Length: 143
Image (tube, rainbow, N blue to C red; front, side, top):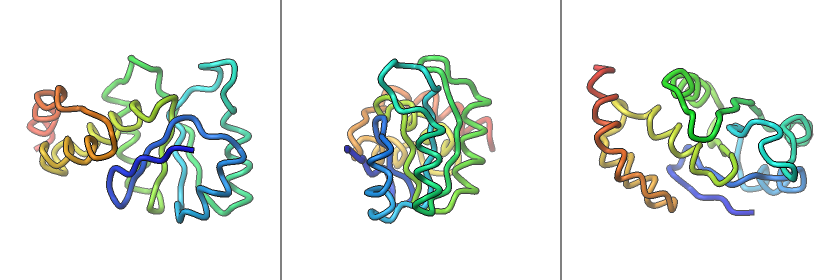
């Protein structure tokens, strides 16, 4: 299992399995956020199975499916609320971790400086530097 730390409060990961959940809990995570729609791939573990395993290990879990390449401002707003309300640290997962990173980055526009958002994502292995103008625009609209 690959876990990419973005900040002390959030890490992202590619698709996880039921077997990964015990390790996720042992790593100290308090919440799981699934940003991958069920059935996106024939071989992925469905959210209901992950949720059941999370409950067994005392983790909060939230299902917020976001279609790859079709993220909306409403998706970002929902993620911002989920992240704000979730016990920390959070592990968000999707197919590769990229979708979760984008959701987190856009949810933090206007909260954290753009450079800090880009650096945090880059430190986790996700180059989002090309998103700087969109992050700046979103931050300006939130002021």
